Amino acid sequence: MKRAIAKTKILGLVALAGASLVAGGGSPSEAAAVSINLCAVTGSVNLPGDSGVPIWAFTSGGNGLTPVCTPGSATAPGGPQLTTAADGDAVTLNVANALGNGHELSFEIPGVSGPTQIADGSTATITFTATAGAHLYQSGGDAGRQEAMGLYGALIVHPSTANQAYGDASTAYDVEAPLVLSEIDPAFNADPDNFDMTNYLATYWLINGEAYPDTNPIAATAGQRVLLRYLNAGYDNTSMMLLGMHQRVIARDGRMLGNPFDAVADTIPAGATEDTIATVPAGGAPSTHGFALYNRNLHVTNGATAADPARGSYGTPGGMLTFITP
Image (cartoon, rainbow, N blue to C red; front, side):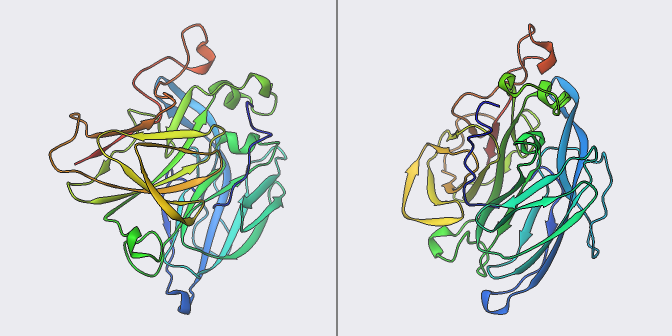
């Protein structure tokens, strides 16, 4: 895979593709005990022009003492968005491996815990103290093939002050939008165990497990501050561009910047996270759809050319594109 072996695991815990799992919490001085269950399962996803692409993904394992998993139930790459209420939550994360075929998970929360090896059919318990920010979790098992198949997800931790990304008042926002960035090569997904990774070629680029036109827009009105939480679960360094307004880069890898700056486009390295705030201007959007937020590397198509039907059908516009809609 173009950079699978060399991919740097940067601090983080990430994806909005699945159902949300929200756990209660308290202030840092009154840490809450939070329990989260995850299942690694197989499944399939429908992409524009290509239906039934096999995936592996994390799903919610319910609220019991141990995860309850349904093999074959994954419907989107990337796991559920996991949300705790505040810094200091004492998190117990139970991760079950229901992939089958002897696949061993290598689950990690970079900068927090791991990797933890989880045998097929087994469950592991991981504990950590939550800290504010947008973080990635993933499994790098099978020499990176598991993450390429969709085994990643998002953990969003809020400070005790509502509607702030971090403890500083400068990070206040009105609308929060986690954006998990990733990609798919349908030819690889069709046979991940035997695929020659030197031939890996992504042809779908996703936001929260969806390719445009299936991506969800971000609703925000004039004057509102939109917190864009980028989580790059893919294998490419990705530049995200916002047309018609600037975005102020306030944090990287779950840590506030001492020198925040304004940008139209900024690059999020593979495995990294970045928080920006964009204020919706008055006077209307530059298009009928709103303010375009898209991959500056022009990964805004779906599928390959007709000469390569195994990787889907070519379509444009598509890919890593969505809109902020007033």
